Image 1 (cartoon, rainbow, N blue to C red):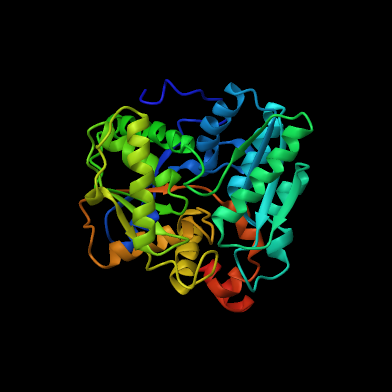
Image 2: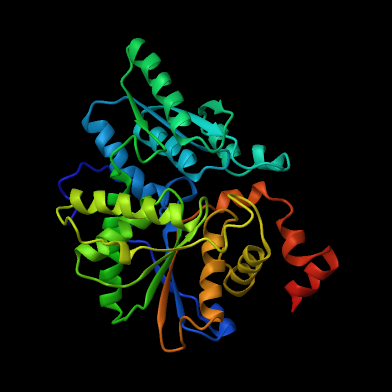
Length: 351
């Protein structure tokens, strides 16, 4: 494998399934849609962060660390899974939560991921600014210094791309290898892979992995945090670094990076009508649960590509489900947004 020289701990249930979404494909009257079920990676309700953490924590353990530190939004899947991984491996863990989403109901702060973090006994710190990656990382490194002075051996998994080697992307280089094997086993010609793009860790890993293996399948990244120009720069920078890490410098070019921010509105973790329809369609057609922050917006983007004629009926498209299901419980208004009043909801569910 391309990533074999890097230390890795086993946390995920892989390979994750590749499933056909028959009902949704028929409903949209477009290409055949497949879903890569990385919401089923196993650890603490799963998600893409499990694959990423295998390499971050592999590096941490190889350096003798006994305490993990990381940062993220209040409903961060990454923070939830970092805590779970630390508990599984017997490491200490401290996390920092940032306020990125304004105007939320109390459930956003108490349910879903925050509930699970507290259930796992996390030591939680808070950072008041939601859009200050460098500042959030600085607070983590300051806390790491305190732990070090007290005799601990901290390992920081930072937020900003300026502050760390993207070991997490190696998990998605590995996933790219897994996907190509699944395509081969089913004799599938895939015409596109669609995913949410935020930190760019998953996006860069998939893209660099595919290109390093000589595969030119387009990767469509729908922005969930920043505009497409800023996100494209982030993806290219990280993919370039990952390609060098796996011994394939130059395999990713600017032309390989595709991002679209049409579903980001009105901002990170905020709802819009296209997102609500994507959540509703997948729940009612397939029993597939998406989240409001990442996968829901990426699926809304895929639906737009289909309805605008970008893909045709003879094609196959893969949707990378990166998890995030616990976040649903932080948005109690979702049902009303998706179904209207309770009478309408009952009618729709019965139809």
